[in-house]
Image (tube, rainbow, N blue to C red):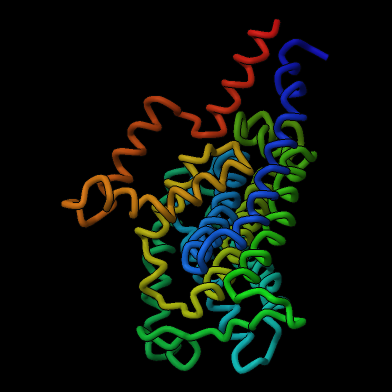
Length: 329
Protein backbone atom coordinates (compact mmCIF):
# COMPACT_ATOMS: atom_id res chain seq x y z
CA UNK A 1 0.00 0.00 0.00
CA UNK A 2 1.41 3.38 -0.94
CA UNK A 3 1.40 6.41 1.30
CA UNK A 4 -0.82 8.13 -1.20
CA UNK A 5 -3.52 5.52 -0.75
CA UNK A 6 -3.31 5.44 3.03
CA UNK A 7 -5.54 8.42 3.84
CA UNK A 8 -8.53 7.11 1.88
CA UNK A 9 -8.12 3.60 3.31
CA UNK A 10 -7.73 4.80 6.88
CA UNK A 11 -10.81 6.95 6.45
CA UNK A 12 -12.97 4.05 5.28
CA UNK A 13 -14.26 3.03 8.75
CA UNK A 14 -15.08 6.67 9.50
CA UNK A 15 -16.96 6.98 6.20
CA UNK A 16 -18.96 3.82 6.93
CA UNK A 17 -19.79 5.09 10.40
CA UNK A 18 -20.99 8.40 8.92
CA UNK A 19 -23.24 6.60 6.43
CA UNK A 20 -24.71 4.41 9.18
CA UNK A 21 -25.32 7.52 11.28
CA UNK A 22 -27.08 9.23 8.37
CA UNK A 23 -29.36 6.21 7.88
CA UNK A 24 -30.18 6.03 11.60
CA UNK A 25 -31.02 9.73 11.72
CA UNK A 26 -33.19 9.34 8.60
CA UNK A 27 -35.05 6.47 10.28
CA UNK A 28 -35.62 8.51 13.43
CA UNK A 29 -36.79 11.74 11.81
CA UNK A 30 -40.42 10.66 11.14
CA UNK A 31 -40.97 10.31 14.88
CA UNK A 32 -39.66 13.78 15.74
CA UNK A 33 -40.77 16.04 12.88
CA UNK A 34 -44.22 17.23 11.93
CA UNK A 35 -45.51 15.94 8.60
CA UNK A 36 -44.83 19.11 6.59
CA UNK A 37 -41.21 19.40 7.75
CA UNK A 38 -40.74 15.68 7.16
CA UNK A 39 -42.18 16.08 3.67
CA UNK A 40 -39.57 18.72 2.88
CA UNK A 41 -36.74 16.61 4.28
CA UNK A 42 -37.93 13.77 2.05
CA UNK A 43 -37.91 16.13 -0.92
CA UNK A 44 -34.28 16.97 -0.11
CA UNK A 45 -33.49 13.25 -0.29
CA UNK A 46 -35.20 13.03 -3.68
CA UNK A 47 -33.15 15.95 -4.98
CA UNK A 48 -30.05 14.12 -3.75
CA UNK A 49 -30.89 11.15 -6.01
CA UNK A 50 -30.92 13.42 -9.07
CA UNK A 51 -27.69 15.09 -7.88
CA UNK A 52 -25.94 11.71 -7.66
CA UNK A 53 -26.84 11.15 -11.30
CA UNK A 54 -25.27 14.48 -12.21
CA UNK A 55 -22.20 13.66 -10.13
CA UNK A 56 -21.77 10.43 -12.08
CA UNK A 57 -22.02 12.31 -15.34
CA UNK A 58 -19.88 15.32 -14.51
CA UNK A 59 -17.52 13.95 -11.89
CA UNK A 60 -16.83 10.56 -13.44
CA UNK A 61 -16.84 11.33 -17.17
CA UNK A 62 -16.30 15.10 -17.23
CA UNK A 63 -19.42 15.86 -19.27
CA UNK A 64 -21.50 18.93 -18.49
CA UNK A 65 -25.29 18.97 -18.55
CA UNK A 66 -27.75 21.71 -17.65
CA UNK A 67 -30.71 19.78 -19.03
CA UNK A 68 -31.39 17.10 -16.44
CA UNK A 69 -34.61 18.83 -15.46
CA UNK A 70 -35.98 17.29 -18.69
CA UNK A 71 -35.29 13.73 -17.51
CA UNK A 72 -36.66 14.65 -14.08
CA UNK A 73 -39.87 15.73 -15.83
CA UNK A 74 -39.99 12.61 -18.00
CA UNK A 75 -39.77 10.41 -14.91
CA UNK A 76 -42.54 12.33 -13.19
CA UNK A 77 -44.88 12.22 -16.20
CA UNK A 78 -44.11 8.56 -16.88
CA UNK A 79 -45.18 7.56 -13.36
CA UNK A 80 -48.25 9.77 -13.60
CA UNK A 81 -49.38 8.26 -16.90
CA UNK A 82 -48.73 4.56 -16.30
CA UNK A 83 -50.21 4.61 -12.79
CA UNK A 84 -53.29 6.63 -13.73
CA UNK A 85 -56.53 5.15 -12.36
CA UNK A 86 -54.56 2.31 -10.79
CA UNK A 87 -53.41 0.91 -14.13
CA UNK A 88 -50.00 0.06 -12.63
CA UNK A 89 -48.55 0.04 -9.15
CA UNK A 90 -46.42 3.12 -8.53
CA UNK A 91 -43.81 0.86 -6.91
CA UNK A 92 -43.38 -0.83 -10.28
CA UNK A 93 -43.74 2.43 -12.19
CA UNK A 94 -40.73 4.01 -10.43
CA UNK A 95 -38.06 1.59 -11.72
CA UNK A 96 -39.74 1.55 -15.13
CA UNK A 97 -39.53 5.35 -15.18
CA UNK A 98 -35.82 5.02 -14.51
CA UNK A 99 -35.39 2.57 -17.38
CA UNK A 100 -37.45 4.77 -19.69
CA UNK A 101 -35.23 7.76 -18.87
CA UNK A 102 -32.14 5.61 -19.34
CA UNK A 103 -33.26 4.83 -22.89
CA UNK A 104 -34.08 8.49 -23.52
CA UNK A 105 -30.76 9.63 -22.08
CA UNK A 106 -28.79 7.09 -24.10
CA UNK A 107 -30.67 8.01 -27.28
CA UNK A 108 -30.06 11.70 -26.65
CA UNK A 109 -26.42 11.20 -25.70
CA UNK A 110 -25.37 8.90 -28.56
CA UNK A 111 -25.41 11.59 -31.29
CA UNK A 112 -24.74 14.57 -29.00
CA UNK A 113 -21.69 13.12 -27.26
CA UNK A 114 -19.83 12.76 -30.52
CA UNK A 115 -19.68 16.56 -30.47
CA UNK A 116 -17.53 18.77 -28.30
CA UNK A 117 -18.22 19.70 -24.67
CA UNK A 118 -19.63 23.11 -25.60
CA UNK A 119 -22.01 21.57 -28.14
CA UNK A 120 -23.21 19.07 -25.53
CA UNK A 121 -23.81 21.87 -23.04
CA UNK A 122 -25.88 23.76 -25.60
CA UNK A 123 -27.79 20.61 -26.54
CA UNK A 124 -28.75 19.88 -22.93
CA UNK A 125 -29.73 23.51 -22.42
CA UNK A 126 -31.94 23.26 -25.50
CA UNK A 127 -33.52 20.11 -24.08
CA UNK A 128 -34.33 21.87 -20.81
CA UNK A 129 -35.89 24.77 -22.72
CA UNK A 130 -37.83 22.72 -25.26
CA UNK A 131 -39.40 19.91 -23.22
CA UNK A 132 -41.69 22.06 -21.00
CA UNK A 133 -42.98 23.76 -24.15
CA UNK A 134 -43.80 20.39 -25.74
CA UNK A 135 -45.57 19.28 -22.58
CA UNK A 136 -47.87 22.31 -22.90
CA UNK A 137 -48.92 21.55 -26.48
CA UNK A 138 -52.61 20.85 -27.02
CA UNK A 139 -51.68 17.77 -29.07
CA UNK A 140 -50.31 16.07 -25.92
CA UNK A 141 -52.83 17.61 -23.54
CA UNK A 142 -54.90 14.44 -23.12
CA UNK A 143 -51.80 12.77 -21.63
CA UNK A 144 -49.88 15.62 -20.03
CA UNK A 145 -52.76 17.85 -18.97
CA UNK A 146 -51.20 20.76 -20.84
CA UNK A 147 -50.54 23.85 -18.76
CA UNK A 148 -52.78 22.48 -15.99
CA UNK A 149 -50.57 19.43 -15.40
CA UNK A 150 -51.55 16.00 -14.09
CA UNK A 151 -52.56 14.82 -10.63
CA UNK A 152 -51.12 11.61 -9.23
CA UNK A 153 -52.83 9.17 -6.89
CA UNK A 154 -50.21 8.51 -4.23
CA UNK A 155 -50.98 5.20 -2.49
CA UNK A 156 -51.76 5.32 1.20
CA UNK A 157 -49.65 3.53 3.78
CA UNK A 158 -49.98 -0.23 3.10
CA UNK A 159 -50.50 -3.20 5.42
CA UNK A 160 -52.28 -1.08 8.02
CA UNK A 161 -48.99 0.29 9.35
CA UNK A 162 -49.41 3.04 11.96
CA UNK A 163 -47.66 5.63 9.77
CA UNK A 164 -48.89 8.75 8.04
CA UNK A 165 -48.48 9.06 4.28
CA UNK A 166 -45.53 11.42 4.73
CA UNK A 167 -43.83 9.02 7.13
CA UNK A 168 -44.32 6.06 4.78
CA UNK A 169 -42.94 7.87 1.74
CA UNK A 170 -40.03 9.08 3.82
CA UNK A 171 -39.12 5.43 4.39
CA UNK A 172 -39.74 4.58 0.71
CA UNK A 173 -37.30 7.33 -0.24
CA UNK A 174 -34.75 5.88 2.18
CA UNK A 175 -35.07 2.48 0.49
CA UNK A 176 -34.46 4.09 -2.90
CA UNK A 177 -31.43 5.94 -1.49
CA UNK A 178 -30.01 2.72 -0.06
CA UNK A 179 -30.40 1.03 -3.44
CA UNK A 180 -29.14 3.79 -5.71
CA UNK A 181 -26.33 5.38 -3.70
CA UNK A 182 -24.32 2.15 -3.21
CA UNK A 183 -25.01 1.28 -6.86
CA UNK A 184 -23.43 4.57 -7.87
CA UNK A 185 -20.42 3.90 -5.63
CA UNK A 186 -20.00 0.41 -7.07
CA UNK A 187 -20.18 1.83 -10.59
CA UNK A 188 -17.41 4.31 -9.82
CA UNK A 189 -15.23 1.53 -8.36
CA UNK A 190 -15.81 -0.84 -11.28
CA UNK A 191 -13.94 -1.24 -14.55
CA UNK A 192 -16.58 0.98 -16.12
CA UNK A 193 -15.82 3.71 -13.59
CA UNK A 194 -12.11 3.48 -14.30
CA UNK A 195 -12.79 3.66 -18.03
CA UNK A 196 -14.94 6.74 -17.52
CA UNK A 197 -12.24 8.46 -15.47
CA UNK A 198 -9.67 7.71 -18.15
CA UNK A 199 -12.02 9.24 -20.72
CA UNK A 200 -12.45 12.29 -18.50
CA UNK A 201 -8.73 12.76 -17.97
CA UNK A 202 -7.47 11.96 -21.48
CA UNK A 203 -10.02 10.83 -24.09
CA UNK A 204 -7.42 10.36 -26.82
CA UNK A 205 -5.33 8.06 -24.63
CA UNK A 206 -8.47 6.16 -23.58
CA UNK A 207 -9.43 5.62 -27.22
CA UNK A 208 -5.90 4.48 -27.99
CA UNK A 209 -6.22 1.83 -25.24
CA UNK A 210 -9.31 0.41 -26.94
CA UNK A 211 -12.05 2.10 -24.89
CA UNK A 212 -15.15 2.87 -26.93
CA UNK A 213 -15.40 6.52 -25.89
CA UNK A 214 -18.80 7.39 -27.49
CA UNK A 215 -20.38 4.22 -26.08
CA UNK A 216 -19.16 4.79 -22.52
CA UNK A 217 -20.16 8.45 -22.63
CA UNK A 218 -23.62 7.54 -23.87
CA UNK A 219 -24.00 4.82 -21.23
CA UNK A 220 -23.13 7.15 -18.35
CA UNK A 221 -25.44 9.78 -19.80
CA UNK A 222 -28.21 7.18 -19.77
CA UNK A 223 -27.39 6.14 -16.18
CA UNK A 224 -27.43 9.77 -15.10
CA UNK A 225 -30.83 10.23 -16.77
CA UNK A 226 -32.04 7.07 -14.97
CA UNK A 227 -31.26 8.65 -11.59
CA UNK A 228 -33.01 11.87 -12.61
CA UNK A 229 -36.05 9.90 -13.82
CA UNK A 230 -36.45 7.95 -10.58
CA UNK A 231 -36.08 11.19 -8.63
CA UNK A 232 -38.70 12.85 -10.83
CA UNK A 233 -41.14 10.00 -10.32
CA UNK A 234 -40.66 10.13 -6.56
CA UNK A 235 -41.08 13.89 -6.49
CA UNK A 236 -44.29 13.67 -8.48
CA UNK A 237 -45.67 11.13 -6.00
CA UNK A 238 -44.65 13.27 -3.04
CA UNK A 239 -46.29 16.35 -4.55
CA UNK A 240 -49.32 14.47 -5.98
CA UNK A 241 -48.99 16.74 -9.02
CA UNK A 242 -46.73 17.37 -12.04
CA UNK A 243 -46.82 20.41 -14.32
CA UNK A 244 -44.49 21.59 -17.11
CA UNK A 245 -43.66 24.93 -15.47
CA UNK A 246 -41.97 23.08 -12.61
CA UNK A 247 -39.20 21.67 -14.79
CA UNK A 248 -37.76 24.66 -16.61
CA UNK A 249 -34.20 25.87 -17.08
CA UNK A 250 -34.05 27.44 -13.62
CA UNK A 251 -34.81 24.07 -12.05
CA UNK A 252 -32.03 22.53 -14.15
CA UNK A 253 -29.61 25.17 -12.89
CA UNK A 254 -30.68 24.47 -9.30
CA UNK A 255 -29.85 20.78 -9.77
CA UNK A 256 -26.50 21.74 -11.26
CA UNK A 257 -25.83 24.07 -8.31
CA UNK A 258 -26.68 21.28 -5.87
CA UNK A 259 -24.18 19.01 -7.61
CA UNK A 260 -21.43 21.63 -7.41
CA UNK A 261 -22.12 22.35 -3.75
CA UNK A 262 -22.16 18.67 -2.82
CA UNK A 263 -18.91 18.00 -4.66
CA UNK A 264 -18.90 16.47 -8.12
CA UNK A 265 -16.93 13.46 -6.89
CA UNK A 266 -19.30 12.70 -4.00
CA UNK A 267 -22.12 10.22 -3.51
CA UNK A 268 -23.49 10.57 0.02
CA UNK A 269 -22.51 14.25 0.07
CA UNK A 270 -25.29 14.68 -2.50
CA UNK A 271 -27.64 14.76 0.49
CA UNK A 272 -26.03 18.04 1.49
CA UNK A 273 -26.71 19.41 -1.99
CA UNK A 274 -30.32 18.22 -1.75
CA UNK A 275 -30.83 20.00 1.57
CA UNK A 276 -29.30 23.18 0.15
CA UNK A 277 -31.72 23.08 -2.78
CA UNK A 278 -34.70 22.50 -0.52
CA UNK A 279 -33.97 24.86 2.36
CA UNK A 280 -31.82 27.63 0.90
CA UNK A 281 -34.89 29.72 -0.08
CA UNK A 282 -36.02 29.64 3.57
CA UNK A 283 -32.55 30.66 4.73
CA UNK A 284 -32.53 33.45 2.15
CA UNK A 285 -35.94 34.69 3.26
CA UNK A 286 -34.84 34.68 6.90
CA UNK A 287 -31.43 36.28 6.34
CA UNK A 288 -32.50 38.83 3.75
CA UNK A 289 -36.29 39.25 3.72
CA UNK A 290 -36.01 42.15 1.26
CA UNK A 291 -34.68 39.71 -1.41
CA UNK A 292 -37.76 38.07 -2.87
CA UNK A 293 -35.90 35.92 -5.39
CA UNK A 294 -33.44 33.41 -3.88
CA UNK A 295 -31.34 33.21 -7.06
CA UNK A 296 -29.11 35.97 -5.68
CA UNK A 297 -28.35 33.85 -2.61
CA UNK A 298 -27.61 30.85 -4.83
CA UNK A 299 -25.17 32.98 -6.77
CA UNK A 300 -23.41 34.28 -3.65
CA UNK A 301 -23.17 30.79 -2.19
CA UNK A 302 -21.72 29.37 -5.39
CA UNK A 303 -19.12 32.14 -5.58
CA UNK A 304 -18.08 31.49 -1.97
CA UNK A 305 -17.91 27.73 -2.58
CA UNK A 306 -15.87 28.13 -5.74
CA UNK A 307 -13.30 30.32 -4.00
CA UNK A 308 -13.10 28.51 -0.67
CA UNK A 309 -14.07 24.91 -1.52
CA UNK A 310 -13.69 24.46 -5.29
CA UNK A 311 -14.40 20.72 -5.03
CA UNK A 312 -17.54 21.12 -2.89
CA UNK A 313 -18.30 19.27 0.32
CA UNK A 314 -16.79 16.04 -0.99
CA UNK A 315 -13.51 17.78 -1.73
CA UNK A 316 -13.54 19.49 1.65
CA UNK A 317 -14.01 16.18 3.44
CA UNK A 318 -11.22 14.61 1.41
CA UNK A 319 -8.88 17.46 2.37
CA UNK A 320 -9.82 17.04 6.02
CA UNK A 321 -9.09 13.31 5.87
CA UNK A 322 -5.68 13.95 4.34
CA UNK A 323 -4.94 16.59 6.98
CA UNK A 324 -6.00 14.20 9.76
CA UNK A 325 -3.81 11.45 8.35
CA UNK A 326 -0.82 13.79 8.01
CA UNK A 327 -1.32 14.95 11.61
CA UNK A 328 -1.39 11.35 12.85
CA UNK A 329 1.84 10.64 10.99
